[in-house]
Length: 332
Image (cartoon, rainbow, N blue to C red):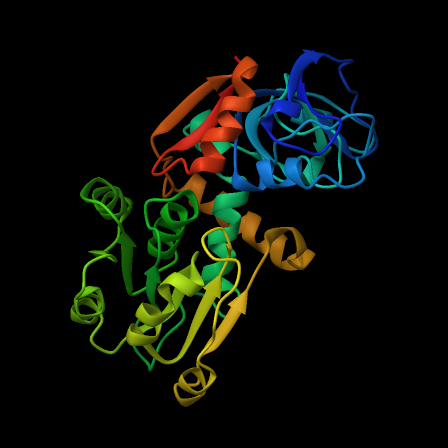
């Protein structure tokens, strides 16, 4: 089969596309014919900082969508032919999704309804599971606040992959209000189309006042990707007892925390990394994302396609910042 592989850590120049033996599904595994492989920041980060590998080479790619071609012992044979979306395909494993075939534990191949496109399936995984956890790590986002409706949510970067999923999942799970920030009219429109009740350009001097117009009593949960850059805005609009959940460190890897201001408002500052989320919470995330897909509540961002032969260019685009696009590798 064709596969993108790397043998040592480094820049995108360590990637090469070559023929490798097609893997077989082992105990509790399925082999999936990959249609589209999603590309995420975690892919280039893993490649640059590659530690011990599960084989003589590593196939990158955590996310993807395709069709189960064969199953290993212990897996129901009726799953052959099933359309699926994949998550954590390369987590401690050799066979990521940037190849004609990927072999994953059966639970990491989640049924994809016929009504859902492979483009959507390849957009789930890391972004959607991260978004769900940010929204629900402490309590369900739809749970009552002060005896009223669900939580009031602020999504930073509402036109990015995680932000887009967070808006749609918050609406699906009955948040009472979803406000999203972005940096340009096009991105603001994408966030609005995803379902945000209000959108705000965070670069504007009165961004906090605009958010307060939408949420006069403040927001209860903030899905945050750039803590240092956005902390002043977050503190200005957070309601007492709010949770700020941080899922990325790309913009500023360190942040200065005004401890007293968080204490006075009884705020919770939480950090998360999907790969070390407790297994039971990860299973819950998968179940809820699967339900949202079945209900037609999730949509993909505009798709930027690359053939497998241009996997390095796909990684470079994501590393440089893909903006309001989902980068995928098309293997069909």
